[in-house]
Image (cartoon, rainbow, N blue to C red; front, side, top):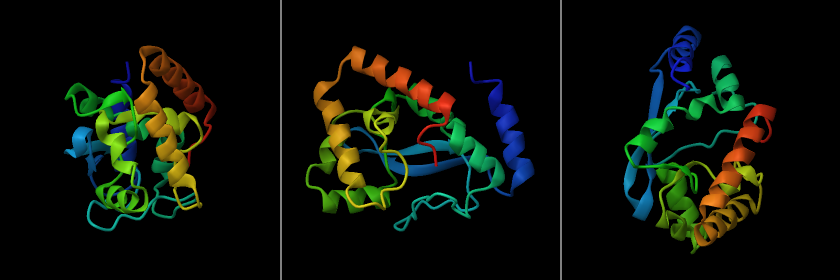
Length: 177
């Protein structure tokens, strides 16, 4: 269903800025295995090492096309390939860059428990308002609490509820940075 958008998005990215169309970033999947999470490139930088600066509101590294892709969550579409490969699910705890994963593991002893299931393209934390930067005090704790609540209470009905809330958020532009 999203296939016709891919070449249009790729062309827009290429016309807007130099660099590849797809960005692959190492993140942790189920049981803390390392996976390359795919995204349409939305920034002028492609950080994938021990230091990764989180995006912030009005981040100057985000391209013009990148702002639109991030606001509409279209930058996440290539993760459907991760889902098809079995590395991710549609719903689950969102994976973080390895640098952030290591930092959050040091801060919160229960953080690694979120790796008990495949990471998702969307999740309970995202539809509960815990998407984006974790710079505010308590933001990563709230995100992890929601992720762990999802891990503990997983059901097909919960997935359907999260998916419907995700579609509503994407359509309304709610909670996008």
